[in-house]
Image (cartoon, rainbow, N blue to C red):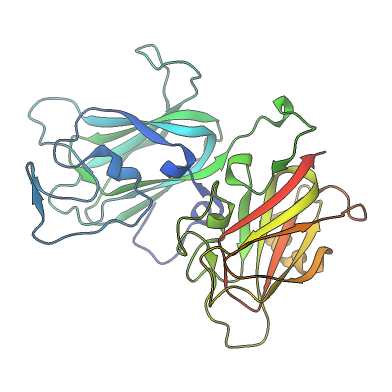
Length: 333
């Protein structure tokens, strides 16, 4: 467990934030949220503290907070994931909760394609763990099962600002139509960013999210480059595919969109993340350097007969800037 440390665990960097409501994740049950609404727990924005703000129930807090428990037991809530998923780890964030944070917390998971009931079997993913106030608790999960629902328990009561769930969406590709075109870079189809040189203003995973970007902050954006070179990121596709079209969406980027981009690609199995990132500079060119237009969905047809099926791409942007969404459209192979 890491608390408020500068070192970021690999599960945070490599995992998709599965608790984001934009992916369809929702809280479907809760024992109590008297002081602060349960739905704030999954808010994708960082928590805030507003001095002097009160509501009918007391001090307004940006998170989930239950009343003071006067009997035995503990509080909990149940989360339904947007899609069946594998969890790598969590961040239990008690920011701004000092005299009202829970003493401990735990997390359980289940796979259920019907309604939950008293007979539902829950599997422990994180054992009861002591919490501290105003802290980030970064906890890794070893179990690589597939889960549809999670139960987050706090002992005995109190408030948590955010619960971040890091992992990867599970896709049953064997059951999918192989004649259809899919966006294999999309988070919902198992895509994920595994390496990048800079993410100062926005994480590369943002541009793999479903739907259009909400604003400039919902994107991958690098700092202003003051030295020679260019920026890049490496993306693992959800499934090997023959690419038919690439869409580089620069929506919201007007004075800070990349001048141009190129894409390299490869088909690789059984390799480490570090090796993939290191070797990506030598991958074959799927798309040569192409000019980009500002605030636009830039669509480019692809003829990848030479390369064939791929499962990794490297997006290079010249020299820097922001990309709202990246779509890699192709058919499964």
